[in-house]
Length: 220
Image (cartoon, rainbow, N blue to C red; front, side):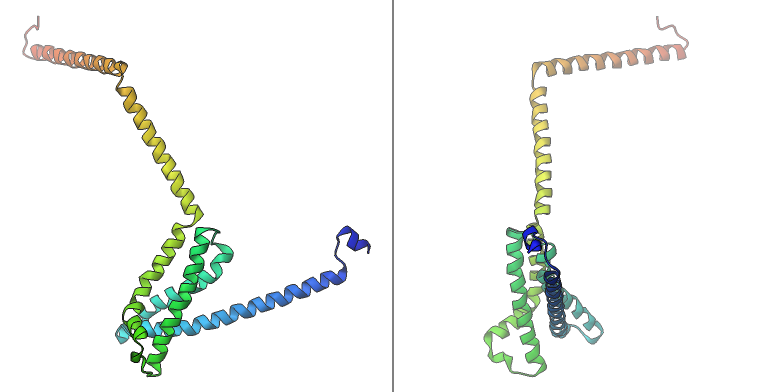
């Protein structure tokens, strides 16, 4: 009773909490393992699908789209825990994450039917997706990531800082142009011109005196 009044958990409660944490960690590990197994299987199907476009010596290039698609699916699953912020970026990440499931599912259907010699040509949608969708999803996934990165609050803060710096620079230039348009600036420019002209004339006179002395004549 004393422990409950002070808010300090009892030994039994601590043991129970540890058991719950251990069970939760075990379930999380099992879920992660199942996801990894699924990604390996779908990744193999994606590799087989995209490697069909290349000759035998270049079939390894099929790994690139396979890793892009499967890696994106995995990162969209885990990104909400370590990266994606609330708001626009989080909403886009959720939408694109589910879109990645749809892309992987359609790719697996197309390749699985090809491997089993199933007549998928009767399905107009799958036929259309196999012709257009399979190659298009590669730049589409890159576009997903661009949208998510653009919505990152850190990127938006950097852009706002650049905009503020550019605005301040433009304001300084506008203030300078206003100052140069005043009468004082005109007079200062005129004075600068006179001084410069005097310096040039003085150098010219000095050069003339040198020429006279070189010819053995007195400049006077």
